[in-house]
Amino acid sequence: MNLLTYEQALGSEDGCREEYLMYEGLRNTWAGQPLVRKNMLIDGKWVAASDQATLSCLDPYSEQEWAEVPVATVSDVDHAVSSARRAFDSGIWSNAPPAARFAALRRLGQLIEDNVEALALAQVRENGKLMTEMVPSTRAVASDSHFFGALGEMTHGYTVEPSIPNFTAYTRREPIGVVAAITPWNNPLVLLGWKLFPALAAGNTIVIKPSEVTPVSTLMLGELIEKAGIPAGVVNIITGAGATGQALVQHPDVDKIAFTGSTQTGVAIAKIAAERQARVSLELGGKSPNIVFNDANLSSAINGVIGGIFAAAGQACNAGSRVLVQRGVYNEFLERLSQRANAFRMGDPLAADTEIGPLSSRAQMAKVTSYFDIARGENLNLAAGGVRLDRPGLFVSPTVYADPPKASRLVREEIFGPVAMVMPFDDEQEAVTLANDTIFGLASGVWTQNLSLAHRMIKKIRAGTVWVNTYRMGGHVIPFGGFKASGVGREMGLHALDQYTESKSVWINTDAQS
Ligand code: NAD
Image 1 (tube, protein in one colour):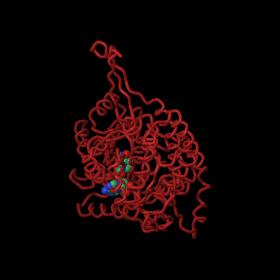
Image 2 (tube, helix red, strand yellow):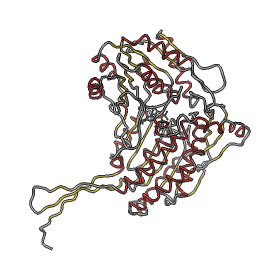
Image 3 (cartoon, helix red, strand yellow):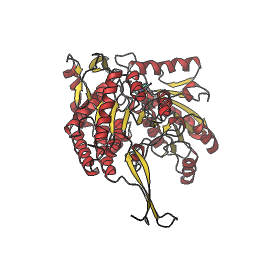
Image 4 (cartoon, protein in one colour):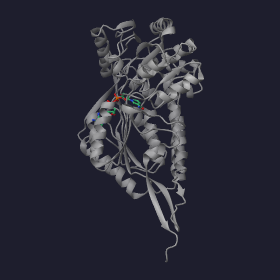
């Protein structure tokens, strides 16, 4: 069974699993190796924390610590933001010709492509995602660098012919200034690239704070940023946990915050940003409905639902965690889904035939298993899984609950694990009501062969993405982001640079006497 993620769908090598056999022996060479130690990138120098504090990273498959990075202090954060400010104000990047910025992003894209394997391996160690997913996903990062670089060269406002005689008017788009990019652990480089590349293409400078669970791959990207010839201070990378992120958000010299993470953290950041009117874009959580109608091609729909909730062990913002199935196919669907959930090959994320890897961290394990406890307390009907696996590594079984009450916490809250809540519905109206009965609005799926029904659902679902007879498809040409509590703003797409530019209006009196 192939749990296709959209990065895999983009990478053409899906299905060529032989290519991945070579990675399986690597784990032996990792065993007994000393900790990988990395420093932060501030003002073009690789530095430890000013108080020498560090945090360590856990490989969730072996449950061994494998890397150590600094924990930035408030003064380190200030140093990084000041460096980004100086670089911005100097004009070395913000006033460089867009073509020069594009050339640098092309060089960076090529360096990422040349180092895909090393970057993918680091992410596998950091968060336990499958190598078969991380290679194409890292390739997508390389291509994003080219795409956003090209968009930067196209940055443009618009011209209008005003009704007032002898005046002309137009708009310009200008970089915002110092951007803070704060990223989560579930897809470290893809989610960073969606911020870093458009921010740089538009002429901003940046301070990056990756998740404390996955800092190494971002620091490795920093090494490539240096090699690409991007000037010192334009990109700074600080590491640490929530307190470091908070110090960055609070820094008065940060003009724009681009955040991906939980809704709770996003709300805290938005409140701080509002005090000084810093610009904010937020990509937050989800509880996305994946809706199967009676007339759907059931085999395709089951594959799509499985990819939607079990790929990446359910640790995806756009996971289709609420599976709504029309009554006519509900029993058959539930039985087939549960059988498949019980049959996945779980194991080493480096192995070519592993279908589901471990959860990313001990904190995530505690969170997911706490929902298993809540389900027992709520007496939910367990159709598959619902336990931590009795084996080394942070594994939980792919889990299916059948017909839970709408008020169940497992229906309402984002679990961020391989847990499908399968609920029946009778007709189109009930499907719409259930789909929209959530504080979130990130993504959704509709499975039907009726084109008119599909179009009606597209209009009625309150979510940033609607997939029809597919799930998780995506790419930099189309925007991604959420309605409601799933976020503010959109990443990717033709207008991605709007999030990293201010609009300036210009009026000219064409009849002025000199
Ligand atoms: P998180 O909110 O715990 O942490 C995200 C980042 O914010 C980390 O770098 C963390 O150190 C930092 N942080 C934590 N507290 C902070 C604070 N008070 N101020 C500033 N920074 C702070 O989220 P997570 O557990 O790393 O990621 C999982 C969440 O991310 C899920 O809710 C998921 O849905 C969401 N997500 C959303 C998208 C999207 O595009 N909408 C994509 C991926 C993940």
